[in-house]
Image 1 (cartoon, rainbow, N blue to C red):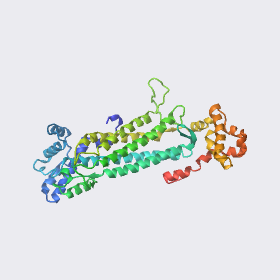
Image 2 (spheres, rainbow, N blue to C red):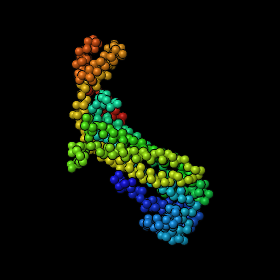
Image 3 (cartoon, one colour):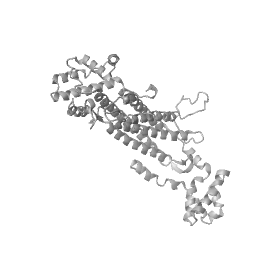
Image 4 (tube, helix red, strand yellow):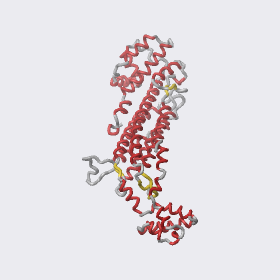
Length: 435
């Protein structure tokens, strides 16, 4: 992943040095279990731990792999160079490369999930704070991009909070799904290694033993994990799109924070563009790009092939690093988002009361007018507002058929904004568990 869209903690998780450290721990714990079973001498198992604090030489491993054409063998050769060839002769006893590779990949995905869960906690906190801050900041709701009825900015933040909370729950499940390890040997039969070794290694590394692993851990687990990342990315885009629309010049109900010295355009000095949320839209596409390949990895030949390997070497780091960056960026956008309540009211009043049309429609039906006639009466007055810039309330008061059913006081009452916010507390209690 390019540094521009990377954060250090997640990047470090995918560095070769981190991978080789996990490989070592798997091999060393497996030796301990083998020694406990009497399969290998205890002294040999203890000798492997001499590399516990050693920094593995990535360049040396690459050099060996250039000859062996096999990454795990290259690592094992380097490990023997460190602990001694005789001491290391029982390392990898009864194991196959996938035992190391798959278990390591799942550990990396688990740790990536932990970072992402922390990211989501930060985003949820920001969304909640802004939701409470603008709980009763009235703005126009839109359907099809057209004025519909009043909502509040707080409700907008609250629905994004609820969506991200669902995503957090999904990610927790995905983390659980991926938290398995396999030390089952060639084709997964445990013919050359006792299942107790797998149980020991998994316990030491915070995993559950894979119930049945063939020679690889089943890739439906990984498909579910990356699909979850894709859903989270789509939710990020959902929020980003809303902010981008609100920042449009014709709307300008909110905008990204514009820092001192920031420039919006190389050609037009007046520009203040939603560059961060546009960037988030693009990053979401890249995270979702990992989903289909992860799905296609589920179908492997017989007990094992490596068609999934090259895919995972890319999508593992790229998807998690990108999503980590995107979540952090979105949190910053939400924290600093500039809100314009006066513009929200001005936009809502642009069509002079038209947003209250449903209340008038319902009042007419309650007064005994058929729904068809009520709709006709309201619509013909509404169209005067659309087409001629009239005032909706004045048109209703001047319509004899409307006033035959509703008094002026009843019509005036239908233009009360408070009517639309009377259940905001109820919605907030559902979302946040508080008033």
